[in-house]
Amino acid sequence: MTNHNETLFARAQLSTPGGVNSPVRAFRSVGGTPRFITRAEGPYFWDADDRRYIDYIGSWGPAIVGHAHPEVVTAVQEAAARGLSFGAPTEGEILMAEEICKLVPGVEQLRLVSSGTEATMSALRLARGATRRDKIIKFEGCYHGHADSLLVKAGSGLLTFGNPTSAGVPEDFSKHTLVLDYNNSQQLEEVFRTVGDQIACVIVEPVAGNMNLVRATTEFLQTMRRLCSQHGSVLIFDEVMCGFRVGLHGAQALYEIQADLVCLGKVIGGGLPVAAFGGRADLMKHMAPLGGVYQAGTLSGNPVAVAAGLTTLKIIQREGFYSTLTAQTRELAERLTAAGQAAGHQFCADAVGGMFGLYFSAQIPDSYASVMASDKEKFNRFFHLMLDAGVYLAPSAFEAGFVSIQHNTQIIDATIEAAKRAFAHL
Ligand SMILES: *Cc1c(COP(=O)(O)O)cnc(C)c1O
Image (cartoon, rainbow, N blue to C red):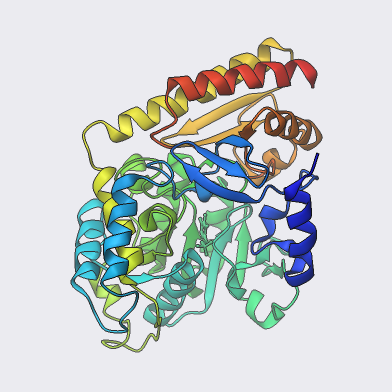
């Protein structure tokens, strides 16, 4: 039997480092050959051998209305026929900005960019420009894209600044980044007490989705809010992943805590490259051409991408969208937990809105350290058993999963049947 995935992977590695354009796609964590995808529809995608999978990565978040939704595809086709890119403003960008300002608490103005990395990088520059401070705080296990200042892990002590997690990041950049433990309010208090007036901003994933799924506690986010206000630091919620995933108004509404700046991406592009950062107008006025903080983009607010994003934002506002999505995702998490535990495994699952986490551990983790303590080897075997059964989970024990509105009871039933067999064979 020919295996087109293997042939393609071998060929890809000749022209592209590791054969992929983003590292997690390479299956390094779980081993084996990545599947090369040829098409997708609703809750499914198909690989190069024409094998169908129930897709639980949803392009890592964007595919919330299901793949190739006819309304989104039509909007993209119509926009494309009018021209692909102009390098001059369009009304679509206004509509997009108005829609996001309406839906995301505290966002009075925003700027569109093309990736989440650009959004967080620009928000950071804005926070530094507006406060005239250099130091920033981030948390272990949160991912905020691959800008230099953010590819940093904890230093040797609480008040020592971080170490680069990537080659090519000068220590001169990472030394401005303090990395603290997620959900540790005491540490945050301690650091603010010492260097509070030097902190430009705190950036956080309020529902973390890049170390598997880990919820922040309300108390942790409240402490962060209070300390930022007291010390004149900018609070940045990186909702690139959790925005429009945990609910229509994002994590700010879920926790009833308002950030100063919010970063968005993934869902707002509906599968095409759109991201954004925005917030208080008095902060946003520091952006060029009004203020001194420079940021720009040839394809920012691209008309085809905006058409996909706007249409997606319209669909998710329909009656019952989030209650259905949340119920489906919760049902998946609960039935997986029951199946895993019935088979005698230390296993649990959690869900927030349309995001979920699977953990081979006795309890739902609340920090990077507790996620890292889960049984990664068992997850890897589970992943491959599920993949062989036609269920595509995130190819890493340290990534969240995503459900679309098209993952109905029938899809969940099929997933649970596959999971029961996998748990029995583990
Ligand atoms: C995906 C992600 C990013 C980076 O977005 P890209 O579009 O991949 O550059 C930033 N922050 C969070 C929380 C993300 O999940």
